[in-house]
Image: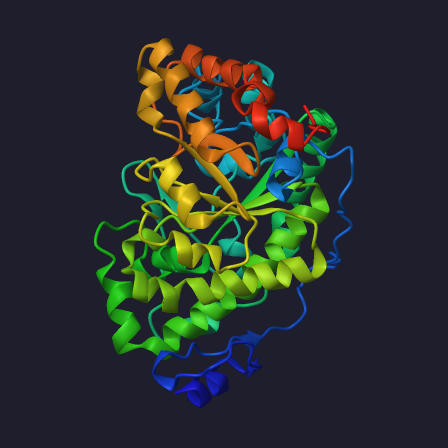
Length: 407
């Protein structure tokens, strides 16, 4: 069937996965044409003593406290965002217009001074740049009117065109200038499996029955789609880094919907290849991997080669650290609901999580995104507590071994 797809798309394949077991082998991805844009996919990022605290922690350098940021850091819980959204009701406009992206991204930075400023965007933003159009409807959310489920459907795909993503590059450059060295600028992408769920299902779903059945009824089509996404997403990551991102987070948001054995086959190899391609060009850029519902996948996630594993709030931080070991970073994992609790309870939970994570390679975050309706004063308190923590107080025995901590 691979030959049939090759003839349909006119793509040449090159192997990059070892295939020791034919029944479990992943179809090697196509080798796409060079990107349509003139953008040069090179990476100038390099390790520096002036790197932001978050970058140092992600790389495993000794730091004086845990850096902190929040997933969905900018959004509807902030009154200033809701006011702007009333003026610009289209999410696509807000997330695809440079001035609005920068303004929204900086709203939580100006209010709370987190250690990471993530670009206001969406994991589906790059889809039109490689041939998949989508809309976002008020009730249904993202809608893809022409889902990809057959060899014929694959014809719509093409190499990623960065001319259609200029607003992302421009926004990252401006954010880098705005925050200076005071915070890390974070870019992000969706993992191939997660992006494929939208492309195959035609939007959001609670059951994933169409794409899960394709694993068995049309595996050649699904493998080709995932391979295309792997190359496009890797190029998109490098584009973000070259535009100013200090660090990248990969969201495999729906990877947790797969049984571990199927995640091992249908998601992990493609994430691993993205990491390989990015690290080949940008070896110093930390990569974080987050999966919602990842308790059964931690050890498998570690094997992707990322620098940091994001834990959701259902995983005990102490157990997560024990399973992953001290040689890889962890991120998280305060339950977002704690932000609705008394501030004293929130303080205790933050301290507990930090103690369980240990004094090295930990980025303080929530175990999921900020919930709608979260009190802004609770978010402010979260970051105030984070800034007040000192590893030399929490871990006095460790300080003697690491006297050159960066604060």
